[in-house]
Length: 553
Image 1 (spheres, one colour):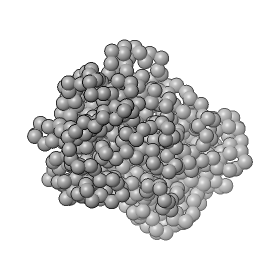
Image 2 (image 1 turned 90 degrees about the horizontal axis):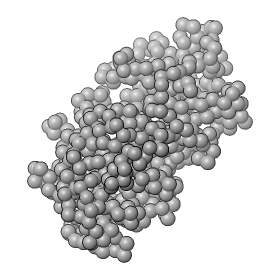
Image 3 (image 1 turned 30 degrees about the horizontal axis):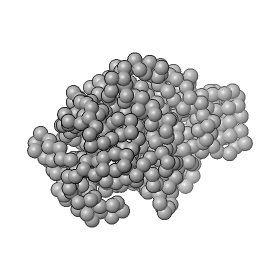
Image 4 (image 1 turned 90 degrees about the vertical axis):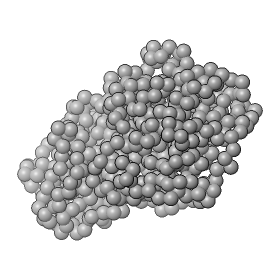
């Protein structure tokens, strides 16, 4: 497997631009008034490679501690969870010990836990070569978990907690099934490398993945060149097949948290991971807020501790969480979470009940009645947008994935990169925007994408609400010849009141492209390697029944 992975020399950790360099490698115990930290504790893996971890404990003498492991590439010394402008994280919620997207050691050690931040193989000062996820990392996680469980200050039980990469590491560890791993709580991470990270609907993502590739370049040996590997694998092939392991093999208790607010990155993958894992005891929470803010709110942290107390201590196991619903979700109304309502579901995904709302190019209408005649709309997809709207006469919940069946002709090209944006408009016609990604408040209801040459469907895996594309080949368009595109729109949870409207936009570009801003990292999801040229014609009517498929409550 290593032979087909493109690698590069690591970047000297002492010469990293934009991040603090790690302190000199030195195993030592540092005492603070509220905790002690054992820095650069070496863990020897099965092949002799040593990785380094920092261990936070309540005191030098404390023993019998459950362990929370945070495993990520950003540097165990990098404590910036409070610093990004727009994150919504109150500085009072986290201490100066808090690692990026990781639990706060001050809080957890005060409640009798040990917290471990790890630098994976090949990153920073840890030895070996770094492979971005995959079998080697799963073996390393297994070994590290068992070594930590055997420490003289530990109680033999390990849990994992964290956001993004720190959540994906939990998929891997749980699939490897180390005996001492007793519970996981992954907060928001993609689970399908191809469909949620490398591309969206086959359209290459060009904003986030170069940043990720840079983040996994800091080490003393060789690191995987993730951006180069994604570019070398434009179709869904074996490169992507074993990045996370088999999620259906995960059996440990799991408290999974997803959001409606991370379309283009983590929303779809976290929901699908919950559905895939086989754990008897698993719970799903879906919010619609900024992900870092929600992770660190005191109420969220208390729920995290209640979960881990149940399984890492003698806290009663699943019986201690008998009042937790299987699925708890936020249904958004406005951008203010105080206007949301929380609901409970028996499971996820919801039952496959749906309605079909037909597109009519005459006036951009969207509704239950099919148009009685053929109508078209032509647009320049790089400059214009075709919009279809429905006005609601009664309160309507839209909770779950949607799909757009769109008949499209690329009039002058053999491919088309289609972007779908679902928006909410108030009764006054003003758009209602929602929290989006980690830092922004100007997001839509939902997003969908498809490269037209990737339109082939997997009929066995597809449902009315979730079209599944194998992405294993390309079928060019014939210019001027209409084709049906089945476009997956990622799941959302929104309520519409009488007089309000749902709008579906179709265009050939991202819904927003942000200018660089001081203090705001380039976290936006972008698609700048496009195949759009010339005009599109969208077709509606009896012979070309374009429609939006929506979940029905």
